[in-house]
Image (cartoon, rainbow over all chains, first blue to last red):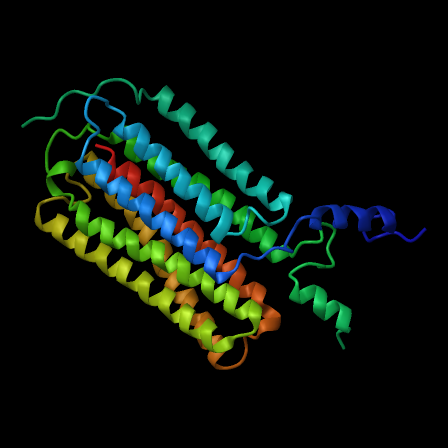
Length: 124
Length: 202
């Protein structure tokens, strides 16, 4: 049986490649979709700025809402503009690995160094 | 000579002759972006750690100009749209539009960096220097690193534009623009986080 340069049988190699390409790179959003995505991102940014100026009466959720909106924008840009929603799962894992590691390391770092400890009030 | 099948596979963006079936360059760019998450994660964490711990002014809420920074953010967001349109144009083989969108992206990026330089200058005049307080140090290092990434991106965009003008970047090499696009969008998503964490959350 023919083998690839890594020594795996060619048929296994081909099916692995096919599996990676499955559902991959066949779908490119149209320019119109990109415009729609941009409008959504613009609307979210407008809501963020609005939340900065106008707090929701009776509830103190502005910071949480701002965080959720930022995550939504992040996911939309990565998914559509960076094409990760339609791209290969290896690429998704590669990026998610870096991002996940960063979140894990820095959340641990901030907790260790007392991010939730109330700092002294600044001098006037 | 490239076979017609190979050409079609290349045009569809797949069929790379690697173990993964993916282009090594694209794989490398995603790995690089994953590592960049760690770099910016460190800078953002440091900013968060020092937030509210400055014992001398000026303080963030006194000097931030949110409408101005919102306009800058809009420029960068818009540049992501023009970048993705450049990628789409070169994949269709429309070189004229590719050049237009590449140049538009570089222009919007340049407007963003100019805005940042203006912001830094006005903060400096109000007394916020790199050494003034913890806020100054962490703010300038974080946003400065981001600005340096945008500046590098602009240089690369102009290089790509120059290559298309000289006919050295053709639709057959559309992946080069796509890979650069990944870098540019990454710079945009970093700003999405910075804008919220540094400017909007009090």
